[in-house]
Structures are given as C-alpha cells and as structure tokens.
Amino acid sequence: MASERLKLVVMGTGPFAVPSFNALLDHDIRLVVTRPAPPVKSRGGPPPSPVRDWAVHNTLPVFDPVSINDPDSIETVAKEQPDLLVVCDYGQILKPAALAVARLGCINLHGSLLPAYRGAAPVQWAMLNGDPVTGVSVIHMTPRLDGGPVLCTRETPISDDEDAGQLEERLSAIGVEATLEAVAMLQSWDGQSDIGVPQDPSRVSKAPRLSKADGEIDWGRSGREISCHVRGMSPWPVAFTFFRSHPEKPPIRLAVKSVRLTDQTSEGFHSGEIVKTEAGYLVATGDLMVELISIVPAGKREMSADAFFRGHQPSEGSRLFSL
Image 1 (cartoon, rainbow, N blue to C red):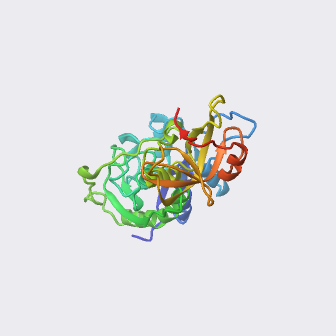
Image 2: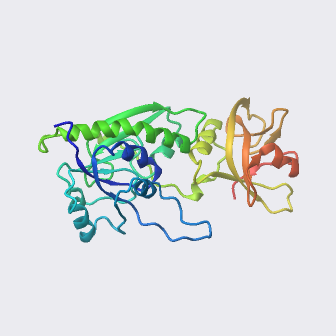
Image 3: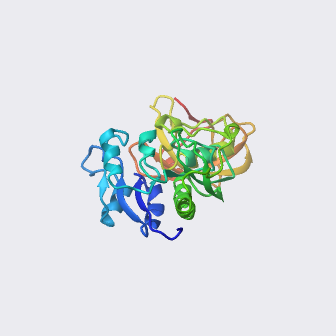
C-alpha cells in the first residue's frame, strides 16, 4: 500500500541530502550511513558533516564504514532488513552486492537532469557550461554510475545572479518533492516489472570532480563564459587570476569572488587588461568587458576591487594573467 511506512537505510554525507532525508522521517529510518569523518588538520575542529549532524539531532543510528562494499558493511546494513536504500551526496559507489540488500533496491537523488552531468559535480558543470536550465533526477540505481532508469525529475532555470553554491542549495530543496514521489512509486511497485525511464546513451555527459587548478581564469574567453566560470567555481574551488602592480614585483594571486558582465566591448584592449572607469574596474575579455566586483588577495580578506586597486594602482596596460 502506498501509505505504508517503509524501513529505510539512508546514505549521504554532504548538505545536498539533508532536506530530502529530513522529509523521510515519517518512514522508519533504521540506519544512517555516512562517510567516516576525516582527520582534524587544524585547531579549527573537524570539518562539517551535515548528514551526520542531522542524524545525531534526530537520534538516528549512524554507521560510517570506510567502504560500504566490504562484506561486513553489507552485513551491517542487511541486518536492518530495509525495504529501500535512499542515497544522496554520499561519496561512494555502491556495487551490486550492496545494491541488492534492500527488497525494493536503491534510489539516488542527483543534482542534474540525467543523463546530463553524470558524476561528482553536476551543479557546477551546468553553470560552467552556461546552461539556462538544470534540475534534479531520482533514479533507481544500477551498478553503472548515475546510469539507472529515471523515476522522476524537477526542472528549474539557472539565474545569472546566483553562484553554484546558491544553486545547489535551491536544488536540494527542489529534490524533496522528487524524492518523496520516487519513494511513493517504489511503495506500489511489484518488484518485477520495469520501472522508470531508461536513460538515452546519446545524451550522456560527464561532470567530473573539480580541482583547485580548474579555477584559473582564461581572460581570452568571452565575458559570459568568464561570468559563468566565476559563479560555477563558487564557493569552491574559487576562480582565480594573477596581478602584478610593477614589473619588478612578484605577482599577487587574486581569488575572484564576483564579476558583472557589461555591454562594453573589449575591442582595442588585450585580454585581461584592466581599465579604470567611473563605474569601477573593468577587465577586457574575448568580447565584452567584465567588471570586477569582489576579490580576495592572497593572505587577505575579501574586499571590493576598488579597495584593492586603491592600494595597488594598476599602470596603463596592466593585465590580469595566468602563470
């Protein structure tokens, strides 16, 4: 019956999973599986663990194996006799033996409109590529990464005013309704017939994990591409560039937190050239100028571009550049 309480094991680590997991509290959550806490590297304390914190707050049992696919880990989950596994933002790939533990299998909430952007950074890559629309998908999981049949999706436009972190937060909220719909579908499933819509192999694209090096800005690209790059790299790994106030001084690394695309042409200027105007500091790109809004010089706090350049006056022809 569609109204029965299912015995669930939920698997997740990051913040994207929390709203959907929280919406499942009306079911019988037998176990919360999350990644082990990484070692503390500074006096700042352990890194945040949103799913673990949510589980503790709701007095739910936590299991954090090094590998969910080890026989002992699979046995621990199997002892809960779950009807369904619900996975989101977990960080480990489940192999067939782990997927087979639950009577109804396993579903996964993913931050893209599959089969687009399979992989670890779907939200960021949708923004980096300048997509006008993205969304979430819930799939019935198979051993192929993000490759199972799609149970349901939700779409949303990508705003020019939001960064990847803000978009991800919105998508995590949008995912709640999709997750509940998928769980309802599984509640009435006979376990034998086909369920969901198979993904079209011709439409598959990848969203590999980002690295710090991916943040470097190529000022020869279009202004819109650079705007998407800056927003897609926020809050991590952060877009960056370099500036030298004098030929004999070492370059300063600048993390670029926000820019604004203008309608002013870059014609007559070199890519990366800094142009002071009454409105602020503009940078030439492959087509239109972008205005630098907020930056973080290496070792300093976030500040406006205007405040930075008051202390590091660019000479005529000064450019932002890559090393």
